[in-house]
Image (cartoon, rainbow, N blue to C red; front, side):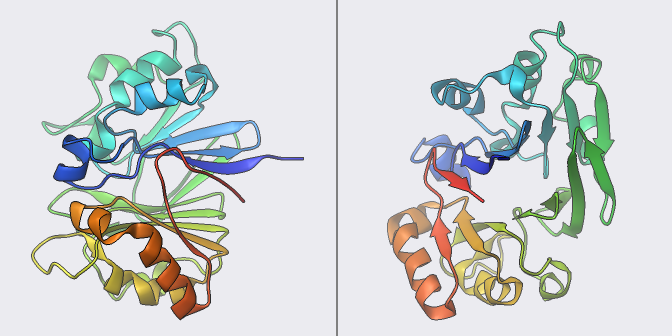
Amino acid sequence: MRTSKVIFVGTAGGRVTTFRLVRRSGGFLIYFGDSRVHVDPGPGAFVYLKEKGIDYTSIDLIVLSHIHLDHTADVNTLIEACTDGGKRRGLALFAPESAVRGEDRVVLPYLLKRLSQIGIIKEGKELSYKGIRVKAIMRHSHHGAETYGLSFNDEVVYLSCAKYEDRMLEVYPRKPKVFIINTTFYSKRPDIDHLSVEEVKELIRVCSAETTVITHFSMEMHQKGPERIAEELSQELGLRVVSAQDGMELEF
């Protein structure tokens, strides 16, 4: 039987929880049977994967939603580890163009040569590698960074960092198996391009995923208690909403 699961390597979002190590960061790893994709390998991903007993060379694909450090700090280290210093072929990278080209690029040019495939993410475009299909649902407004919400095999949907737009209610898929939402704040912050609990509530209801996971927490969310907030959302909406925990595994 095919094993499908998400491992949440870390759940920190923003400068304080990430860089004071209040919570771990490092994005998340999706298993689709024998295929594995690591999404947004932020600070610590390399170490935390080792602690979980995960073989780096079993990872087939790395995906970046945008270039910010809390999503990309370990991408170069992982490329080295996953390719065994360039001796192993078979790793691909899907990322916005800004991540691999130009003055703001976060992937070192010499490491690009170690990849078997490089896919440039654009809104509406679908990329595939080793049975993993990645579609860019929409481009977000996020402090000037080229940022995308993504769908993986039409089963796992990821709403990365973003300023809320009503358009999200139209374009995000209905009834995915897992909907991962970077819910950084509890209260709205009009001057900061991150989502709040109030803003994601209607999106959770409309999309009606089998399981919605809130993650990428600021200090405000950390102190409010994400587990309690997820339980309140579940009761109010009549849907399964869970709070990601560092190292949590979710089968789907």
